[in-house]
Length: 351
Image (cartoon, rainbow, N blue to C red; front, top):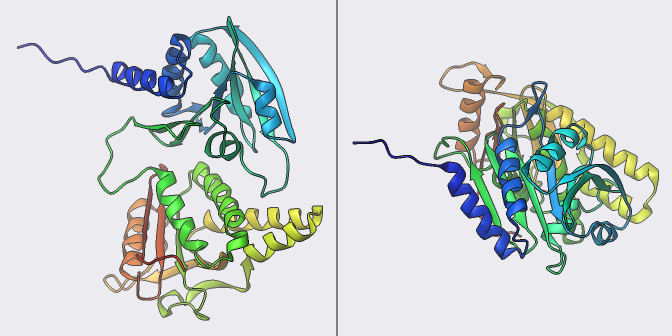
């Protein structure tokens, strides 16, 4: 009896074809190119370094740039419509697609133009993804592809259609990184004032994206803003007095809209990122502030402090944090060095 042949590429090609039809961007050249880009993004590296570029495909560059209002863009190259030009765009632009820059592929009559573009503004300026995809206009078709974490690639369109492609064998308790990150951020901003909640979420989405791309691994937790003291288990912490109050900094920036306030918020982001990439646990409260970091806890089973600096120790510490949810903690978060994300939070209605 002959072996059954299973073509993952054929399955992906069919899914992308249907996706492009829904997005009103059907085109065999785009279909073939996007399949190649998705395969390349699944574990994308340049000179051994993992890169996480966002790639946008559209038909009207001038309209897209108008949507972004204040912007920069750099044309890098152009080639015949086909998968080779799409791969050229990725290879030539991916190392530069950092610090807010993203890759674009512009579909012309007989060619693909490619380059880089970005929106310009403060730390809180709406991202390209939100401007063109989440809040985009259906009469301006745009597709975005990005690697979420190792072996996870997501393709989204302005219509709300999306495909999540998993190139690896996934454990049942591991979800796409963005899902766990978003749920954890929702806990952090739970009691942030409504008029700045969206901006606070945007700040933390950018921050956690940077932490994910650093590939270090991290542990974090959230406590209630009503608690004035850390849980007793967390006595081995560097407590911030006063806490880093991100909503307060955001309010200051929105009120003054000056360079000083923007620099202060950027400095806070850099500081928190450093804390999350250090050993131990970073502690947030559910009003958007960072209250402590470099936290170590003693496991009752071993009697030793867990630093959470290696895979096994980090997972045991995360499991211990989960056991404390509802007993002083609101949420627990873990990111492993390979980009896998776990999050567990309390179940309650948003206040």
